[in-house]
Length: 125
Image (cartoon, rainbow, N blue to C red):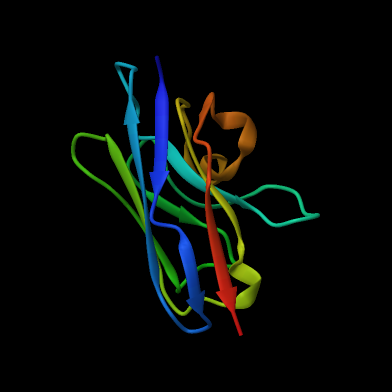
């Protein structure tokens, strides 16, 4: 059974930091392609940071320079370091995997077949 399990969400004041982790299990021949998405109330889910098939990190403009995505060598764990958080970063954050992607397609919902349950991030001003 495929599972993507996120952890590390929470509440923080603006300017603070959080680190999210996603552990993947249950499927073999895993490509590097994994990503973080987020969805705020009343908004569409958006891709914000991912690692493509070649191991290249891809970022949405909204988080570039503040967030850093990394993946361990086993490709089991995807980590998102979030610094200088802003209230507009408040959302449910989801991990996605099980796709093949190159470049910006690492941030497309349709790329991925598996999703985690999400972890909440709340940033107060």
